[in-house]
Image (tube, rainbow, N blue to C red):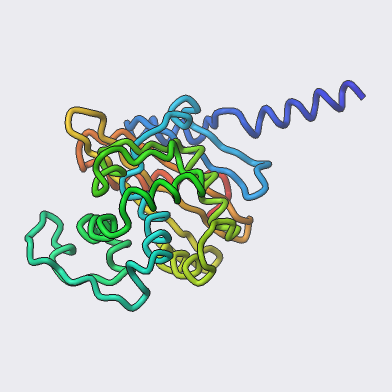
Length: 256
């Protein structure tokens, strides 16, 4: 009986230990950061840099996941709405035109979601953040920027906890809004998998710059959630957010 218990404890320790194969991916890429991969039932968890995975960080554009649901629920936007460009030339060419919800999400159109935020307002955001238990639930003082360089913080573990609620439709939003969000979150599809995700890049003045890639994949192996966060001193590291995530998922046999 004791031997059986020790074996079970050793297996649990293996599943929840920092993952050497993923650590090697980070080492080879010469990048610092963290990744957490977790199965739907929570019995499998692969971690690199547990300390950073527990660190609350600015969500940046990964907040577009709940923000889209909030905007839809509040009637600020619909699946068919056209978001009229204000004519201001911005550094990202894809933003300099009219948008719809799908294009605004996929191109991380900041001005679109800032427009939503002005209509939604602090009171509603505070209520929703508390209800969905998103990160530290703080909006700070700037309704247009609290997720970019303001008070809102979320850890990699908390990202996964939220994504699990989304997958299970266990969030206080209409089902049609949840399904719409899931459809525009599709980032890759293969013969045996569908991957839904969102990138983010936090570039606050005088503070750490970091990039996110968070989401979940449904493959022949099952459903797995991931949250990758990298230190990104420059935009050169940004492609690694997704690249390292895909390599890690392949290393664990989740993607072929």
